[in-house]
Image 1 (cartoon, one colour):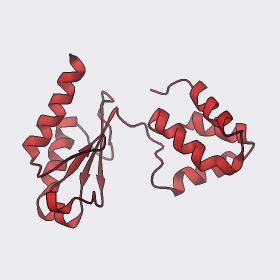
Image 2: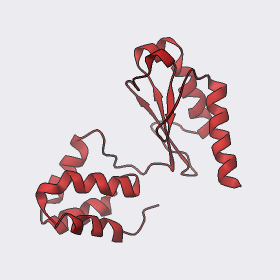
Image 3: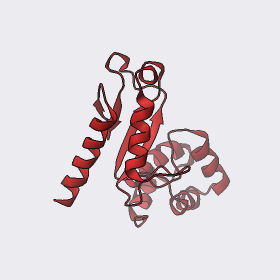
Image 4: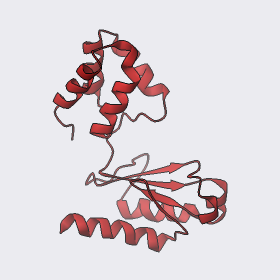
Length: 158
């Protein structure tokens, strides 16, 4: 699933291989690849001439960084108080079942979707809320959420 690392190399070079730019470099690499692969982190460490352990410590310290490959479409279901009270959990569970996710798995087998929960999306008056690729969907139901996912799948097949 990992893309070639040429783009990652170009990103590091863009920052003049300067160790003080580590976080910015990692943010751009994650934006490009949708996660930070072991190979990309090793490349960054080598090019910046810093220990791999330092790069990993930064990657694991900040919650925004992901060491797991994510799907093409990121679904975030709000689990904040307003959304929870208005039944966001059944929405999450329906999506999880639809994507065939079990255990700690967050990404569908086809690599199309990653399902996450977030503490709050800041749209409490529109609860329950979810986002797909940053687009907010309000007053959701399990059925409406599944319809959105199926529409994305159909568009992909077309």
